Length: 204
Image (tube, rainbow, N blue to C red; front, side, top):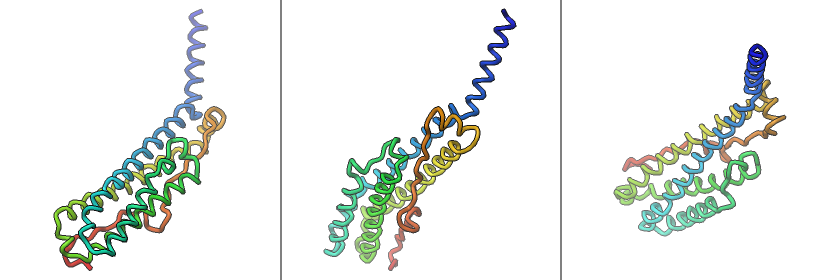
């Protein structure tokens, strides 16, 4: 009986190791990791959106054409923060929803870039303490976004590789019914790179 129990235990142990090698545990772990990384991406985009009211206060003191550009930023922010734009973990396998999210965020980023280029023409605005503080916060946020997107894409690449690679593909497809996740690709060329904000008083 003891011998039978030992053989049974060894067999169960071997089976568990085989199942583990087939992606039973590693595939869900990789998926959850990618979802966690996406949560960081969304948090950093939300951080950028939260800075817009501060930008509004600073720019309202400048010329009329900057106010018009500011309105574009405010409208782009409203579009990028709509509830239907937000993605949850299950949406990360939907290319159409990901593209909609990316487009909304890139529209906001483009509007912010246009506004910053415009207000750089005003030395008196650049010299304001609030403006300098805001620019520093924005630069830090854009860098955080770039890093979070890279981390998310790395996690997605790991997950997508696992569900296509033997032996993990066995558990991924037969047991989990795993579907590839969608990486975050910049809609516009170079948009994945944080902008360089020139704070020099002689910037043109």
